[in-house]
Image (cartoon, rainbow, N blue to C red; front, side):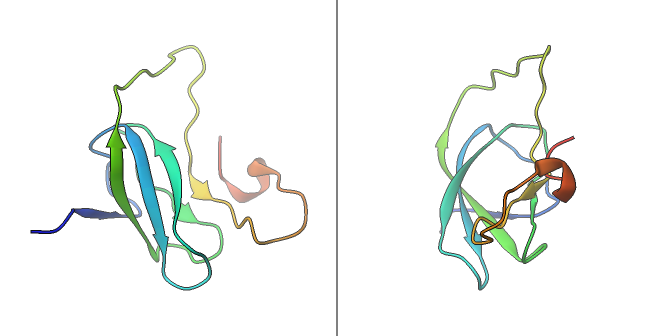
Length: 90
């Protein structure tokens, strides 16, 4: 039985570091995600992303400063990234 993969829009079951697998434009990379949020979309390839839990971590949400990742930025673009323009954070 393999490691479970998750997709954009599913609820994140455990806080931790996830491997991000894009379908075409980018090599795998890692991102830290928090339990209860939803797996984000990619700013370039949309919903064609899968996530694999690498290291689970305790859920230490800071209630006074919540940050949620809504989209993975396209880091291949050479221009400056403004997360508010891409809906990456709110």
